[in-house]
Amino acid sequence: MSKGILLVNLGSPDSPAVPDVRRYLNEFLMDERVIDVPWALRRLIVGLVLIKRPKESGHAYEAVWTKEGSPLVVTSKNVHAALQSKVALPVELAMRYQNPSIESAVKKLADRGVNDLFLIPLFPHYAMSSYETAVARVREVAAGLAPQMKISVQLPYYDRPDYIEALVASAAEHLKQDYDHLLFSFHGIPERHVKKSDSSCCHCLKVANCCEVASPAHATCYRAQCIRTAALFVAKAGVPAGKYSVSFQSRLGRDPWLKPYTDFELPRLAKEGRTRMLVICPAFVSDCLETIEEIGIRGRDDFMVAGGKTFAQIPCMNEHPRWIEVLENMTKEFSGH
Image (tube, rainbow, N blue to C red):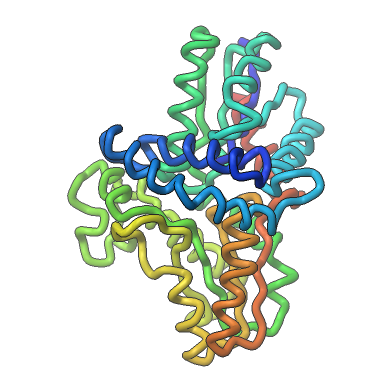
């Protein structure tokens, strides 16, 4: 069989213009794995969100947009090119929402004769609103465009040794700074998503210290995987106990999301005297609106207003050579099976 690789990231509007942002938000929020309510209610909720949010988000995207385009898409394309330069198999890149589309990527691979596809979701942790929806959409598209195509999927790699090593290597220079707290800010998800993903239906957020108690549920538990990544990172980097914590950002709506909330934690930590702050966002492999604008601009402002003295957002791995090595290792493992 002819093998090929597909990288899938989340996506971005085609531009910061309101119509493009509205189109992106509509596709994103209408995904049943993002807002997991019946279609009619989801349509109502999204319709209300789309009244004001596209203009607000458009301003935020303008603050991070580059001459080349969306930081997330530009970086992902560079990662794609770097990986292709190191492996013989054909590699394509797609975004779960908008462009480059999954349809175009799958068609390009099929046209090149690929019938044994290795999908690498660019999400280290399992969540139904990121990893799961990317996998489901690729399978759906392939079933229509190339039904003969076999699809293998890279498992979540939140605790994979070379991923942890790459994450630490990419943060190494920042960790040399004089900081008094390192905040791991992961993308948030609703608590109900964690419970829905619990294969046992009786562990996640139902057992005291559930993430520290061994369970098969952790294979699909976003919260447990995030906490594990942070623990492995601090062990590898030698971050002292008591000098770091975990929080969750980017919540939407009024339902309870994973806590503590980053936008609450930053001012709280400043007021407690943790005035030299480092923030790292390991749920993202590429810098994007949520890291550059939400953390690097708004988060910084909230922290400094509350009494902070220095603030640094550690960039994502982006195009770091060690991250490219991780992707190359995954590809080699696939091509050798």
